[in-house]
Image (cartoon, rainbow over all chains, first blue to last red; front, side, top):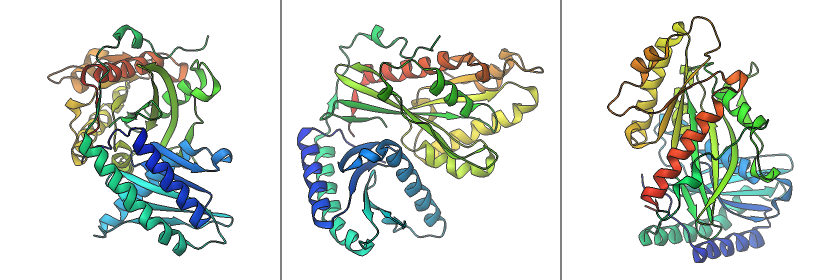
Length: 157
Length: 204
């Protein structure tokens, strides 16, 4: 399994633009790019009322769990997952081996329309991630003073 | 694998607390969450626990914690536990995905030795299923519940669980009193950051 690549400012600008266009066209509330280990990579929309870090972690683990469940019955083509709510629903769509697109939208919109608008966004972001992977950037921390990381966390008295 | 975002200058690192049922994994996270000093309230996220009605971890516990900036990169640690019960072994594998560092929380009581060993073996198997090797991942041992009667000597636990080619650091702990909890956390974070300082963070 290859790792999720280091994204630079241009990559993030590309993802930001893609998610903004998705929200504009689909009228969804929030769109997140999430790495499947549980990391939030980027978010767009109006997430003030939502703890998006926790949301991303729960979403990715739920997706991984259901994908694992599907594989037990030999369903290996698992590409999306949908949670239907009373006010808001969530659609999670596979981007690539390492990442997911998570869309939160009001229930008066249909999941079919979300999938329709998400399709090109997922392909675009997937291609951009391939470019970042091919670049293979390495962030070098070797000139950092190791004494700076001796005791990171202190207990309250 | 750690995630680096050069645009937002963030390094995200995943640490998983792994061990047998009721060994104190969730207690470790609760103590850290309750007692850690943070420079600002945003540096510590909310603790999320997916537990059964009897408070046993069903999927995982989780909270994010921010630490120092290294070369201008803000370091965010995501702390996870796995469910200890054997029936949830598949779930443990899911939580291990993308792990950077591991704390193995062993129960020091004599009667728990078999469970400790079995869980340690499961850890290696689960990593293998994810194409990972324990020898390549920074990890530490925590011998918890040292405050209880009938605990095995540390030498015995070391012989059973840390008797490998390269021995890893171990800590005695009584997590319910927050003893040994921060020592363990600081060691695993230090090992991880030293790894990044030496190797850099590679994107593929």
